[in-house]
Length: 170
View 1 (tube, one colour):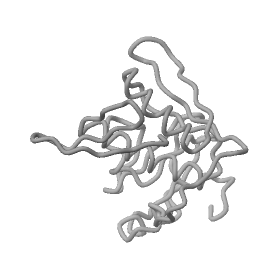
View 2 (cartoon, helix red, strand yellow; view 1 turned 180 degrees about the horizontal axis):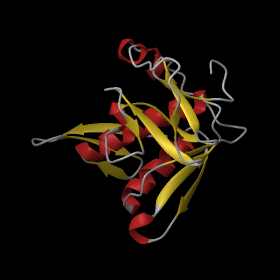
View 3 (cartoon, one colour; view 1 turned 180 degrees about the vertical axis):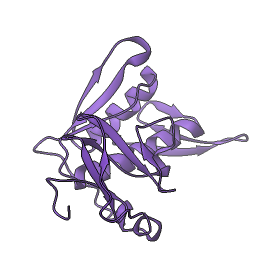
């Protein structure tokens, strides 16, 4: 990801990362991956799993991980193959500070108070901007306020974040 150029064509604008020319859909994946990695680097999580995707899309995720100095692994077989990014001692947050998703005005409205929810331990749960939550589906990354793996089966939703009972603010 060291070299990013944009070239305009008569039909669409294309973004290239190194030797990769990206379609509009792939540009969305690139931006969503960057956003997810920023949130991941600001969190206490050690592993960021992605949903199964094509080999070309996995390559994009690997390149983003490399840019942020994260370790990456592809796991699974066939259509179920996916990427996990792992924190490393050299991992870095982007030089461009941005508002954290849970600090946005819409996130602050997503708060279920002291209501406690259950999930099977080890399940990844996402909190969407519309206030709904559950296992990740094929929603766009931009629709997600927070995501995390629920380790002990209990969580709350406070100020646009998924909170587990071992977290501060439980």
